[in-house]
Image (cartoon, rainbow, N blue to C red; front, side, top):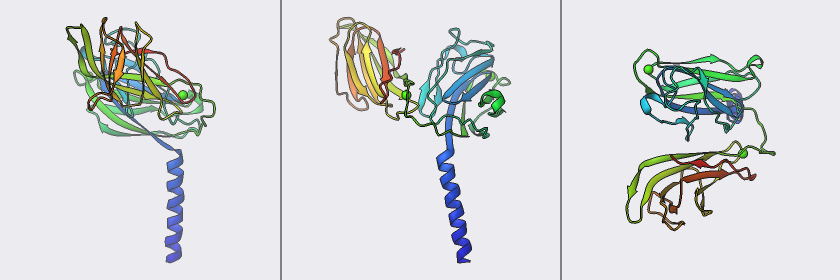
Length: 270
Ligand SMILES: [Ca+2]
Ligand SMILES: [Ca+2]
């Protein structure tokens, strides 16, 4: 009996160790109006949209697709709803760990969905190891939030040669407000950055009209940003929850740099 228990313990230990090494999870939350496919391939995630409004875009909305804790605002070919476009979004290219290339099937756990969520393609050699999960909110009118977790096996790609810059997102927590004397717009934003290899990419904030740069900041930091034509550019510690209060001239831009020195393109905070 003692032997049997010992053997069982060893087997579950080995299984547990195997799962923790190769198993990965991607949490997805999106505002779905019609039918849209989420494609996952390697480090890449993107939407292929079919019916009604594209994810996040119903009726003038501009909601992110949440990928784990990152607020991803995909670009679409057109402004607005991209209704029935049968088009691809831009690509989020920071999925870490990447989806493996051994043909292991993915699985999906539905946390919240009023319509259907279906795996319509398992990764295989024939499709370039791309997995596709279809969200279908066609029957009910309007859009609703869907929340799922995708479980998959990762390929253990070492990050010895990280050449991919981070992806940044500027999540506006409080809408911009206009103040007089001196004229300035103040917004409270959360800075977000993800990288395929670096878990803590450094985030910088600047204005388009001067060379001043604030930072570095970290993923999840909240800052207050004031921008106006007659402000003196600078940054000082902010009151909680803001880690900094920043003054800028011109539009507000953020970018991120990973530990290998790869810098993202500057992105304007909307
Ligand atoms: Ca709908
Ligand atoms: Ca990188």
